[in-house]
Image 1 (cartoon, rainbow, N blue to C red):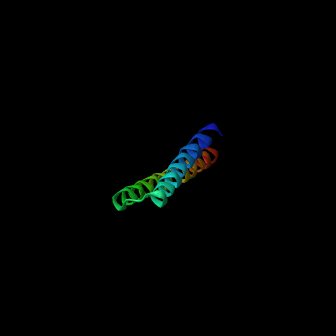
Image 2 (image 1 turned 90 degrees about the horizontal axis):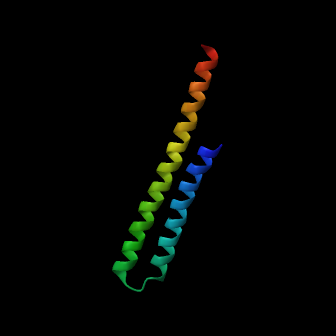
Image 3 (image 1 turned 30 degrees about the horizontal axis):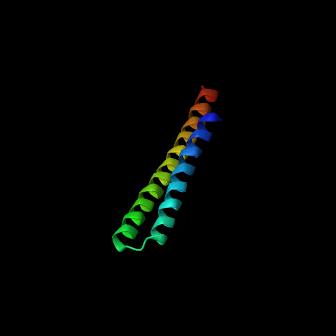
Length: 72
């Protein structure tokens, strides 16, 4: 399904950005830069988790609607 692939690509994009932020934090020599990168990682991770949760909810809703349509 194209829509599911798009949502997965959003989640994957967010996870990739979180990985990048984590790597930047590990490479940072200044504490405030490291902290900023770790906050960024946390934000990207939260977005990925929300995208995954929304994907599951939409899939469950599609199943519910399909089942409701079959039993009507």
